[in-house]
Length: 310
Ligand code: BDR
Ligand code: CA
Image (cartoon, rainbow, N blue to C red; front, side):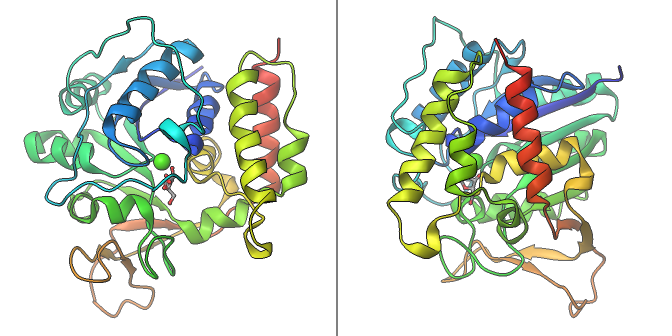
């Protein structure tokens, strides 16, 4: 089997956790490192969650110390969307696993080792990646592509225009989007097409798997949240897992290349401006995910549970 070397840059996070479970269930992805970054909760939690997850899932990879603040602005978290500690109150065990160095050094080393094959799957703010490219610009041609969850071609989830990951660090997104490295943007509007209903969430809980405790905890967290929310908010999107799903099987969604730039200041900071009609007359720099097949995504989660079966 040809293995694809990847690094997962992440701010775990309930949906990040399901995404990492999914990536780990596919041995064709060779997870070289997990690099936590601030985001859903403060860096002290995202980094502890990353260490704990690697132990929980038994992933043999490096873990890098990432950024605890955005490049230039003050850090903001997702205000409780992911529950206490970022994992809906679930506290992972860490039996003393330590970091293997800084995220940007690990990304550089792995990019060199992989000789042009390294892919970055990013599930949070792009701060670690921007720092990597600022410190080591020479490795940019060695990154095969970045598949990122972030942004939106139309509407945001934090402000009318800004999606959370971009809103946390718009400067980092803007820098990386203009870095010349191939980017796939899995934004809100496309990933939300692959929602799960409450009944579909329920159908996946209670399976006898090695990940039962944490998986069920997170799915029950989703179920409670959706059951108790208003009518038009009953559907759960597991954004980061859909991004990993696309990385595993591109037939899950269609993409199209556009010029995309990021608003970094003012009331629309964090807006990924997708130039659908080529008005800026610039070369397309981002492959934008436009559709996502929810039946295929659901099937991938079910297959994942089979993989972890006891
Ligand atoms: C993104 O923000 C976070 O809350 C999720 O983990 C996902 O990466 C969705 O806007
Ligand atoms: Ca995330």
